[in-house]
Length: 159
Image (cartoon, rainbow, N blue to C red; front, side, top):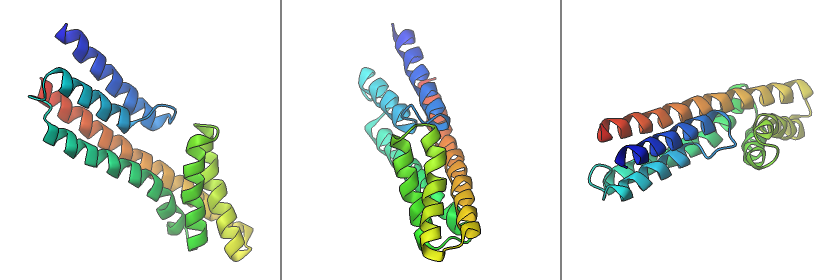
């Protein structure tokens, strides 16, 4: 029975990794929930409360970096604060509207609109949108690396 539960937990964690790349699934949140469920199952001897708190901090960092990276990407390409905030708001909206396509389209659109309102320059606004999308993918990569760290540390603990 123990092997079946462990296999199920690892499958949930793999689904979480997939959810980082295809943002229809919860991502690192699902990985953390799977860890916590396994910790509860085994009495928090291997997966301790302290470990879960540390992993929870990583989850919060991953989620925060995912949103902030769109702002930083837009700023990197020369966007104003309005363009960066547009990218941030676009990524928040994009998660809920038309996922996963909305997650790609709305940060670009938000950065474009914010930058266009600030500067009335469509070329600069389009570049801000491109920066937001580049930042989005950079954030996804960092998010994926954090998810892999979580999975690997979990596997080291249980095996």
